[in-house]
Structure formats: C-alpha cells, structure tokens
Length: 258
Image (cartoon, one colour):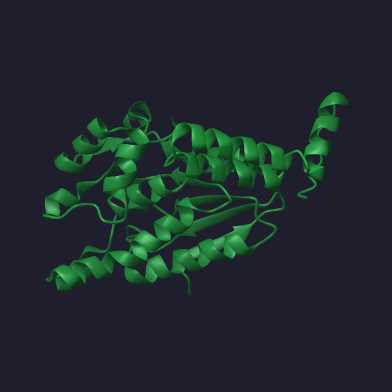
C-alpha cells in the first residue's frame, strides 16, 4: 500500500497526502511512493494543479534518521541523497503547479519538499526548519541551494546554521511561505487556490511556469527575449483567442487547452 495517496476531483485538482505514521518521515520507500504519485499527476491529463500535504501532525518531519546509521562513508552519504534530490527537482521542474499545504511539522526534508513546490501555504502553528546541523550534517535535498535563492542568504544562513524551528507565521514573515492561515485551514486554502488555477488554460500555465523557472538562471535581457517568444507563441493558440473574446464579451472564458 502506498504511503502517498492520490485523488483527483472534478475540477482537476489532485490531492497527494503522505501517510506514514507517526511523522511522515522521508524514508527510501516513502520517497519512492511520492515520486510515483508525482509522475502519475504529471501524466494525468485531467490534473491541472496539485495540493501536497501530510496526514496527522506532520507535513513531513524530515528524513528517516534511522537510515543514517549506515551512512558512514563519503560515497554512501552522497548516494543516499540522489533519490531525494531527484524527487525535489521533478516537483520544481513540473509544468503543473504544486501547492504545499504545510499543516504541522515540516522539518529538514519537509521544508526542502515545501521549497520544491511552487506555492506554499502554512498553518500558523506549523513548525518549519532545517535542523540537520544538529546531527553534524547539512541539508541535502536542495535546502542549501533553494533557501538562499528563494528567501535570501541571511535567512538561509540563520536557519541552516542554527537549526532552529520557526512557526508558520514566522515563515510568512521571512518569505519562506506565501502566507499562513488559521490552524487547520492550510489544505482548504490550498485547494481553493488550486481550483482557481485549474480554471486557467494549460498552455499559458505551462508557459508561465517555464519562463519563471528558466528566467531565474538567465541574464535579464535573455530572459526578456524568452518571455517575448513565449507570449508570441501563445498568441497563436485557440485558448488565447477564447480568453480575449470572453473578456470583451464580459463572460467567463472556457479554456480550450490548444
């Protein structure tokens, strides 16, 4: 039985829920189950947005530390990280938006999973952090790289070097999450946002996500050229013609996805 459930509603919103009591730790089998669910969502034409969360009191409380006892060589440690890094890259590079609904402890690999998602909504009582330094190691699923890129080097140094936890409210103040919501509302808010995104045409969603992602690593004028090219390509789509017509006719557009 998979530790990551997968359901899709009539609006095209997929819900993935990790359920590995007691804390949804990222063991090797759990990483495999999550990857299978992610790949399923990416291949499913009915899916237009994904909400990712954890069951119980944790989003993901971190990696499965019991697996670390065998990581006693440079090669063993490096090899162990590959599956987790590949999963985070798969999520980050997806052409469908992943929204993390952070509903409890999101520590180490949990914060790293949230950072790989495109949008993050946290329960105000959630606990986030990168505490690997307390184990004599560093974040290894992309935490040292995504955190300074997403919310600044100062905050990244603070979280990584101290290993301290912060609340969902603090995470919003730090810019780590898009916003925090009242206790118990993270999944509902994430579903609402996913449903709104699901109403938009897939060609424009895909183009926007690609341009944003690639532009972060490009020289600015080259990124603007990429933006122009993507805009121009969308001008030839039926979806664009429908969107403009609907606006002028004061009605809701019906996405054509062509």
